[in-house]
Length: 297
Figure 1 (spheres, rainbow, N blue to C red):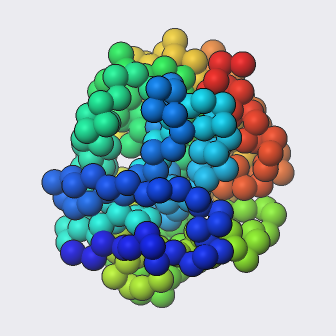
Figure 2 (cartoon, rainbow, N blue to C red; figure 1 turned 90 degrees about the vertical axis):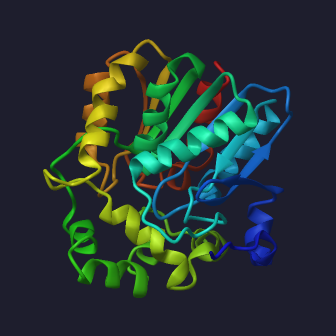
């Protein structure tokens, strides 16, 4: 089983991601995670999506830790610096994996931040342990069934050709470095997003995540996501911030509307000029909004 070495990250990436990477031996392989900030601080669990990794949260991790929070940001199995399992992991597998990490760390109460696939995973987790969840930061994601899928993503999940594009030709992680933002990423930040995905073998889970989007009625993940959606009312009353980039080509205004419909009391902080990687495009304003919310300001 391939397991990336954190020490092998390029120096320019380490400078942006200055964390001691921790390891937990999950049943499906080593899960790597950042655990940064004072141990006595209020925990915040941050969950990334596809094709990113905990690097996505680097600036928010530093800002929250500076305010006294303990910040945990795992790399999902098959992603980032975590092990590459030899089997296809679906949404339910991923919820259970993060659940295992939470139990391993002994987190009895924590705030939650999610992005992209982290929404279905994190809110799926939250509905299974609502008593442990405090504030919820929701950024450009979904946690409910939708019939909408951009043509460029639909192509990446087409039979045979989709996996070839996504995994073999790097037609997902690399394009995300310019399609997921409205402002060009610096060379170093782009290198950071791509660092764990330099080989065909390392990109398997990138393709698996795309294939796990439950568009078909008989898709095996469809009932799991439907169950997450049905359980979302359990989380009503939790403080929630919808921090959204309105130029997102994937999780567009229809997904934002889906959350506002289900959580009408949620706060909103909208960034009209930001794309899918909303914290990259919104910069300090987005980070500060997230910090203020998660610290209860």
